Length: 385
Length: 230
Image (cartoon, rainbow over all chains, first blue to last red; front, side, top):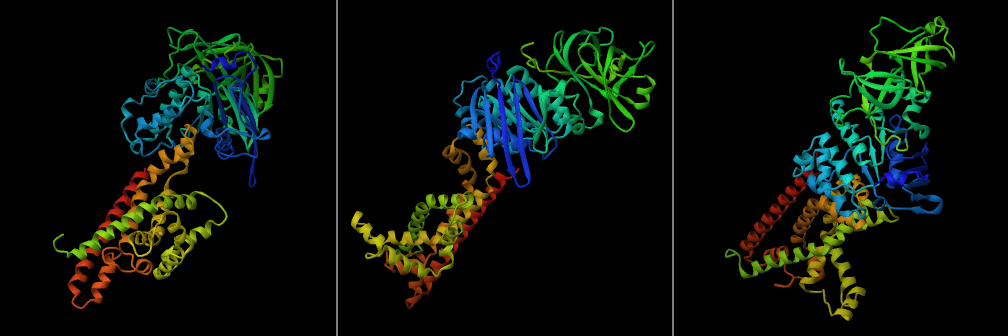
């Protein structure tokens, strides 16, 4: 399927370079998706994310654009190439779903399927099963709830057999509970169909759940791009997500389950963290060897200069301080290398001084298991590993 | 219809035929004009808009006179039509249908244009990303969504067409059985001594036709709103 496209040959799934001015707003963005997976375009509302994916879809003209998907050039203003949207094989899930009101759910789903010239990689029944649409098929779309509408919209886009799926804040109009219900469907698509996706969001939680790659966008510019684990150490992210959400994002594997506590044992650096299992809404089974993502919030990490004893904390990892940056008026962010993986800890500047921390100091990082919740991670996060 | 005299029922059925033909003739042009006005930006758009609405504000006699100049036997188009196809428009029901079509055209364009402006452009974009080309999009998305408006426009134009008087009598005169439509028959009856009863019957008939047409049109308009609503 798509996997073949990214193997070894240096061929990127998606490459985008775009420039557009509109009034006093200017968009100047460049990003790529090197391997199949989900790239999240993450930034505040109005930073140009939607404009960017409309240009990728070909729906919006740009002053200059270069879009290459699976080695096929879709836009190249220098060479005067502009493949029209209907010929791009790019699926688009709009924020407001845009279901056709005069057609039934089934007819909506088949709309793109009947028109695609691409080889089918997913059939009608599989999509209906995957997104739980069976009971909705004969319904008229104006009667659907917000969550149902978005599931149908995702299914409709998928059945056009797209080589890339664009999602423009698909759950923005839904409440938190609805959103939590729908995220697992996208995880399933990511893990079972391996459709490459560009996911626009301003919700960090969604990015954390879904993304393999992140492009941070601010005022029309991509200010940082990379895998989430590397990006979480960047200060630009902190400005977007707020101090409380700052922390290390560790993509790892499940080693086993602690029989007495039911906690998952996850290898991190040279040690191991015990984390709580993913929420029951998640549809992917978590067994030994499963990919898992753990968000270790900086505010939940305690730093000790001696090996701790007699504490309730389940996790203590031995490491070395690699960096200290001032985080706020009276707090510091300490980077700790725990054997190949960097964790972040937020402690008071007073504590930094009391422990005499400086780069190279040997420390223990302590984290309560109660504050660690595993998230199922993309199996395709790094296919070459 | 036993309560109508043969002349009256001839006028009645002629009116229906003339109005129906004008509507069928107008439909494709009205959809095209509505689409141009609602969706395209081009130089001269405002002028086109004004020109299309002229029949609504011009005295109908002027429209009939202009039609005579253009489609008369010595008019540029009339002469050409006669030479090429032997087609006459003057003093027959074809001419009556043409005059009616011109007069009712703006009503039809207005209704279709309003329904087209209510069609969410985003739905067409969605269809594009699903692989639908321009004509495909229009036929599978735009046209079905504006259909109630098209029907409402056709009904309104039909009602307007039934009542067209000035342009018809100027362009094709008042010939019984050929161009004497309902309003012309009504006018003739009023001019005839002892024609009061006939005039009253024709007036009631016109009234009933117009009212049912408007009700039908309103019903379609309501369906349109319900269909495009949440």
